[in-house]
Image 1 (tube, rainbow, N blue to C red):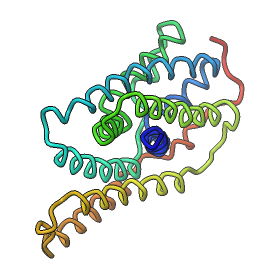
Image 2 (cartoon, one colour):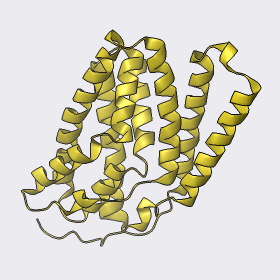
Image 3 (cartoon, one colour):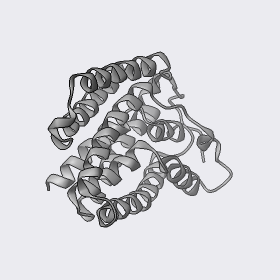
Length: 228
């Protein structure tokens, strides 16, 4: 249950302002919400199953302590990435196929190498279990992208998400820093390393803020959905 709840919470946070949530909003303006939800579910089930399988078997080749340190660093990166935000790419333009396959293929491609997929790999490696992490990350994706679909088809107006993004970013960075403190040997933490690390983190956050993409909620759509 701990693995499931942790996976669910992390993916919901990671999805706030993420590319796939933006895709959910965009597709909700074009297709029926049921079509978008089923497409997201199909893509997420396959993509995250691949991710948890990779994460669960990493420890057979790489020491667990290295994976834990890598996961902590990745969480800090997720936080900075969340601050910077994502832009919709060409995925939203793939509308030559059946609406279901359009959504499913676009989401599967968008998730490859995305921070939610990397978070899924890290969580599977951390908890060494497949089913709870798989179910948790899938449920988290459906909740977060369901919110995106709701915004796309019901609200249809500008709603600031800056507070949500900063809340998620601070949590990610906090978990990452705590993980480094917990897993990196104590004799590594010299004053120059700590000062240099904090300076690097501050500069990274500053660059993320400076290069942040427009809020997902600034990309609005009409209240009335066009027919498929």
